[in-house]
Image 1 (tube, rainbow, N blue to C red):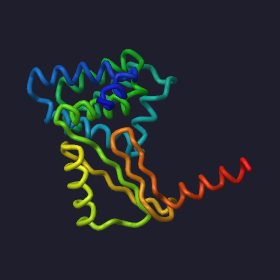
Image 2 (tube, rainbow, N blue to C red; image 1 turned 90 degrees about the vertical axis):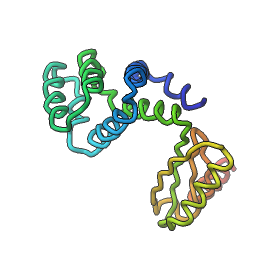
Image 3 (cartoon, rainbow, N blue to C red; image 1 turned 60 degrees about the horizontal axis):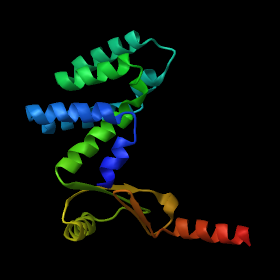
Image 4 (cartoon, rainbow, N blue to C red; image 1 turned 120 degrees about the vertical axis):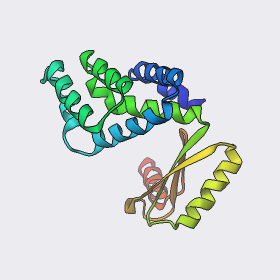
Length: 185
C-alpha cells in the first residue's frame, strides 16, 4: 500500500480522502473520478487557471468566484464543487493539482489498479505496450493502467515506473552514472 502512504503524506490528502469517502457513501466514485480527471487536465493545460488559483495576491473570494464560473461551465458534481471551493476558502487553491492526483490514486487503489508509466526515446508499438501491460498484470495480479510517453532525451532504452519504483535502463541514465563516476575520480 505504498500509494496510500504517498497520499497521506501530503496536505491535500485530507480533502481527497474526505471527497473519496463521500463518493463511496453515495456510490458516485466512478462519476466523480471522471470529473476529477477532467479538472486535472484543465489545471495542467496551461490556460492560466492553476496559476491564478496558486497566486496569493488574489483574494480567496475572487479565486472562488472564478472557480464557480469554471465549475458551472464544465458541470462539476456538487461534492467536487463544494470540496474545491472549501479548499480555496481555506487558502489551499494552490494544492488543487495534488488534490486531484491524490483522489485519482485513491480511486485506483480502491479498484486494485496499478499505474505504470513508460518513457522511451521512440514510440513503442501498441502491440508491445499491450504485451508489457499483460506481463505486469500477471506479475502483480493487479489491473494495470499504462501511461506511455516519448522523450528523445533518454537517447535509447526505457524508463519504467511502477508505483514508486523506477526501473531505468536508458542510455541517458547510464551516461549520467559514468559521468558521476568520472567526477569522483
